[in-house]
Image (cartoon, rainbow, N blue to C red; front, side):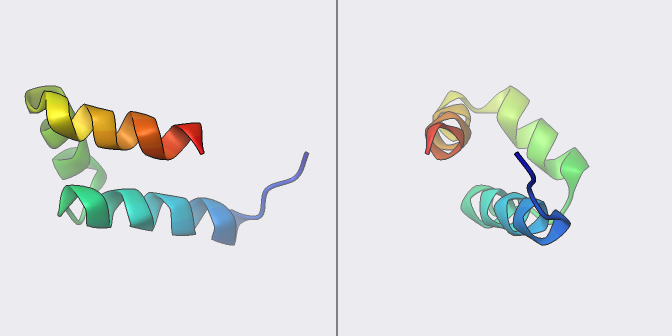
Length: 47
């Protein structure tokens, strides 16, 4: 299974938008501090 780098960037961008963040560090902080945001990520990744 091959996934293009653009697909990966698009998915990461969508996660950042849903979390209202602009970086990996911010996303990790939000994830670690907010259970509801963890559900958003988990649900998104299940698609």
